[in-house]
Length: 421
Image (cartoon, rainbow, N blue to C red; front, side, top):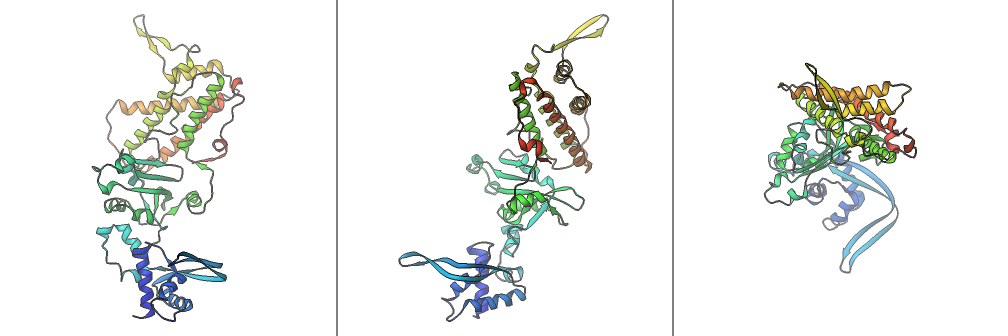
């Protein structure tokens, strides 16, 4: 067997079996070849690697350094070896032209994305998917599903991973997925090939059915945080909304009052309170329901005790009156009108109108049966509505923090200075 063929064997076997989907250096190849070919030098190896790169069998990159350090195992144990002086390593990464001669696996047996890796696909290259691919995991209580500003996580919960009745194929996870955009600017899901290749064959097939073949681009902040080790100041608007509820309750505590909101949803927001995975009327309606639960249904009536009357009399005709409970939004509106003065009442009025708008939209579908509908405009409608709702809840915080007893209040820096997305 020729020296070049021996090198081909080492590179391909290392990629496919020893250290899967990783390249190796000319020095590593040289170390192995010493036992196979007498008199071979590292320069001989580099010359052949250059030939293989030219023929399209591999790609290479150079790494320079000083005082090369490595370890050898001998009879006395592990020996550290230091070669003083500068060195240049040539790293080799096999390509499809080489690997297809060695890899006999079938995509239907190992998985579509595993096969791509086995044929030289870069571990950190991305594949892009329609957001609907996330539905399966968001709706399945066996999985942890989290989504932040520009990334997210999917994984089987420990109790189900350890449960023998759960199919092995479902015991999967995606360490991180990112945010991207298609050619129309619509948001898509991005996942590196390494994570996809770890999925079971069944789940690889599922993801493949949602893959977008057209060219997409990655979100700039996702790239910075996951591949360039840089911190960004962008915060998910959904995370910021829950933080606003928390801050409002903190202000109420300084005021000596009960919390205005019963829950802040910092760690347990409704799963529907997130970016739509598919642009349908049904999903949009669920989103509206979630917002209303977090605002009007979440208002703590005890906050208004002793300040606003909880009931009112309404005429039912024929000189008869009926006593009814005031809505939580009505109590909030009356409280602000009674106890707060506004040089410009418009922000407060816009806030109350937004809360009432959400309540009205939620009540409409509850009283009639409607057909579902698919419309890409629902993505934009959700974005605009969430922006309006966030501005409203932020306005409420800015109003309450002006209370004389809340002068010591300080909001989180990231909430005021971060870019909300």
